[in-house]
Structures are given as C-alpha cells and as structure tokens.
Image (cartoon, rainbow, N blue to C red; front, side, top):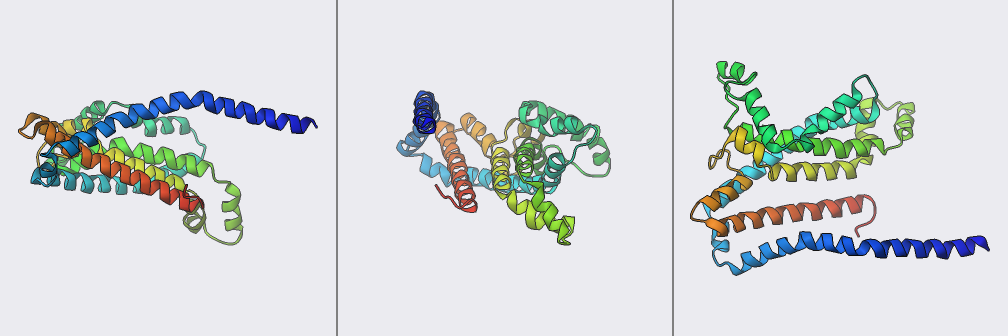
Length: 278
C-alpha cells in the first residue's frame, strides 16, 4: 500500500520540477533562437545575399575552411584517440596534470593560443627559428591555420571520447582478451565501437570548433585571401569591404547551415547506434 502511495507522489514531484524548469529552458532556447531567426530573415530579405553566396570571395573562404577543419580533425583523431584512452584507462604519476594540460585550450582565450603558437612556431620562435633555418615556414601559411585549429579544437574530441571510454565496462575488454583476442584488436573490435557515440560527438564538436576558430588563426596565420582567410576571418573582412553587412550575413548563413546540418546528422547517427532516432 505504501508503494502505491509513494509512486504517485514521486510522479507529482517529478512533474512539478519539470514545470519549474520549463520557463528558464524556454527562455534560454528563445535567447538562442531569436538571433538566428533574425539572421535568416535578414538574409532572405536582403537581395544581395544570394549574389554574395556565389562570389569567389565566399567560395574561397568556404573551401579553405572545410579543408583545414578536416585536416585538423584528422590530426585530432590520430593524437586524440590514444590520449583519450590513456587518460580513461590508466592512472599514473602526473595523470591529473596531463588531463589539465590537454583540456587547457578549452578555457584558454584563442588570442592567447595564437600568441603562444606564434612565439613557439613563428619565424623567430623557439622552434620556428630552427624550422626556418631548414627552409620550413609555418607562421602565416595554410599549415598555421591547421595548427591553430588543432590547438583549440582537439581537446573537445579528447574530453568527449575520454568520457565515453570511462563509461565502458572493462569486463567487455577482459572477456575479449580471455578469448585470445589481442589488446590491439580488442580496442578496434570492442572498445572503439562501444565508444562510437562519444567519438561521433567529439568529432563533430572538434570539426565545428575548428571551422569557427578566429583568434588564434588571425594572430598565428594572418588573414590572407586564398591562403589563410577562413570563413570567420572572411566575415571580418566583409565588414571592412564593400560587401559590408550583406557579405557578413552571407558568410554567417553558410556557417550556420553547415553547423546545423552537422549536428542533425550527428544526432541521427547517435540515435541509430542506440536504436532510437527520436
């Protein structure tokens, strides 16, 4: 009898809490939605936006952004997947310090990251001067764009995937090893597939963060059309040129559409991997 009474009470308490949280949630959603809708409406009303979207200025920036962001993601996967697994599965002296170091770019101002990269890899930098003597230039090149994007975006992949690895019951890996499967094949056949939702989320966050990177890129790579001018930099340039607000709106709409599409695809893929597409 007590259980029957407790269940409705628990249900009423849960509903009451949900009702209490509904208003701030809707206000926050409106805070995000209103500027985006305003941007889309202004783009629809502005007759120059469609013309700007097809201009070489926009297409060059879009192509460079997609290429560099994809390269940044590839490098983040190469270095980030091992780092995430190590941090999730091992405990060693300096583990906490290494975790903090990996996550530091997530809270570091991008301009500080740009200055640090320039001091390290610039022509007169600690490492850049040695590379320059060998005929290798990194600063103010397309490679500098990739490095800047990698610096600020890779931690999002590592953090998401580390959480995914930590959520996996080690028993699955232990059973695989008892069946004679090597550690390497166990990682590829058992661990990584189980961490797929976290890997996908981290990859989307990493790619979109690289796509939107501005401060570090501007300082370390500069703003040269066709070479280092990514979409965010092109938006700044548009404000200072004849394109003005129309050019900035066109570029912003492209970034908004790409980001929205990626999030939708990631959501659908994660839902299917869990057997739920809601």
